[in-house]
Amino acid sequence: MATIEEDTERIRSAADSSRVMVEIQAMHKWFGTFHVLKDINLRVTAGERIVICGPSGSGKSTLIRCINRLEVHQQGSIVVDGIELTRDVKNIEQIRSEVGMVFQHFNLFPHLTVLENCTLGPMWVRKLPKDEAEDIALRYLERVQIPEQADKYPGQLSGGQQQRVAIARSLCMQPKIMLFDEPTSALDPEMIKEVLDTMLELAETGMTMLVVTHEMGFARRAADRVIFMDGGEIIEKNAPEPFFNNPQNDRTKLFLSQILSH
Amino acid sequence: MSLPATASPTYPPGQHPDLPPPPGSAGVVGWLRANLFSSVFNTALTFVSVWLIYEFVTAAIDWFVLEAVWEAGSRVDCRKQGDGACWAVIATRVDQFVYGFYPADQRWRPVLTFVLLFPALAPVLFDRTPYRSQLLWFSLAYPALGAWLIHGGLGLPVVDTDAYGGFLLTMILGVTGIVASLPLGILLALGRQSQLLVVRVLCVTFIEVVRGVPLITLLFIASTMLNYFLPPGTNFDLLIRVLIMVTLFAAAYLAEAVRGGLQAISRGQYEAADSLGLSYWKKTWLITLPQALKIAIPGMVNVFIGLYKDSTLVVIIGLLDPLGVARAVLADAKWNGLSNETYLFIALFFFMSCFAMSRYSLWLEGRLSVGDR
Ligand SMILES: Nc1ncnc2c1ncn2[C@@H]1O[C@H](COP(=O)(O)OP(=O)(O)O)[C@@H](O)[C@H]1O
Ligand SMILES: [Mg+2]
Image (cartoon, each protein chain N blue to C red):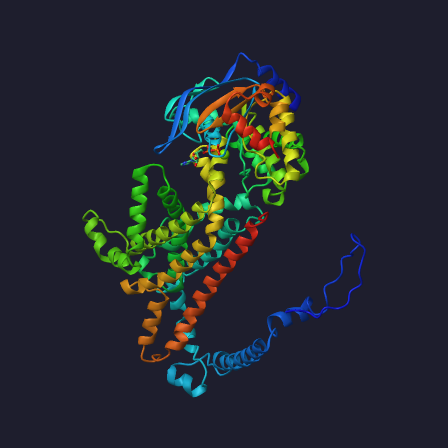
């Protein structure tokens, strides 16, 4: 079994910017008659870190949830690591096992211990034996700095700890892509930093990441590109420096002035 | 209740020590004061209740024990000996109450089945049972073993189902009904939430039809009408037909209890399971069902207790459950008029079983709430 270092190496060597991990083309989505995503085009190469921001209701969550098909798009195409998302259930399960997701409200399994939360995927999806799964789980719990909580239940942990467990749970599947949907929005202020630090560390390993967040400090430090969405459209994409210092679109300017003013 | 403010010393900011609570607000005295003597009205209520309980309990002890008659040949004989309960009626017919007409020389078989029920149940009910994983194999084999022991065949003399009666019959109906309805009820609840329209419609129809019909009607259907639907010449044992009906009936109610549990689980749980790449059945088995069943325990136990007690309805289609035995006993000229004793005895039996189930469910809820906020 790979050690963390080997694993990091695996990710880093895979972080080859010529390899396309996510390719979204002319994608549209409706909720009933409500056109929530409009003509989305996005290519993410291996090792890229993308931050997605935009006002509430602009379709950020829906967009990243389309990537592991928690939401179904109706038009256009989404290809994840070479596999196109279709109605084929086996394809979907395959892609989901390669794409980790971290939610705003953690969504840990409350009836399982922290360790069991982390071994569940490796044991039941990857079909690893229990001791091997536990080895992996403990290693990633160490990496998010809470190995001592392994036998506790999620309800006994603080919000920041729960979110770090959720990150570890996803990492235990050794995913190729990590999706984050506002991972710090439900946290008390003093816990935001510990989660962002974990994510920064992960970014340094070369993991391909798509992060919906309003933490602009994180975007400046970790992102290769920042995407601004409004009304279901991608309004602006740019590297963090030009994005923050010289936004092109009026709506981007307005949004940035609102979130950076306080 | 407000406590008088006592002058307390002041401390510099950040230096306040942890102090014990004021006297009389904690411990036994505190409990008594808060629960029994918190006001004039509460105090009066406490005294009146104690007096009522005393009167009732002494009268009950007199009737049930002190003045009761345990051995007598008939009701008249009883009355000559004392004014209390005439337990002799139970004593002379106890075999019938327990076994119905199960042949006397074969009664070791239901007794053995009953005794084996405990090692079969223990690993299922208690997760800390020693040798749990080995015993679970025994639990799995128990239904077949029990059926063989009670019914016979393969070397044992066959005892026909119409000989089963009394508490034996209640146990057969209750245990079989509970064991068979649990998986069926869970599948119905899952089916009701299925993405597949056909499955969903079938499950909803089944649940609504069965819930919309009184059990007694289903039992009549089992005893009479089912013959019309079955191919001619099939002779389908009445007890089995009743067992099927009781199981279907309980399963429909159980499905609704389980559905309540499933609906209480947040969408985030399904999404987290999906995002790991778990298939539907793994997601259900590992994530949603364990949480749903835990929430549904009180409702499910309610259904089980209901099923167990409703098994007495089979008396109406002529099966000899404890109420049927009671009827037969009371029809005996020597004993008629002793319905208090007879029915209280049956009530006690049912109460003990149902109370055990209810306690078990409370224990299980506590056991499973480890780690809850
Ligand atoms: N399951 C759903 N059904 C109908 N409308 C939805 C659903 N989920 C989200 N929406 C709507 O889609 C829009 C985009 O939602 P979302 O992607 O969650 O926005 P964001 O994450 O940017 O705040 C919102 O107007 C929201 O109300
Ligand atoms: Mg959102």
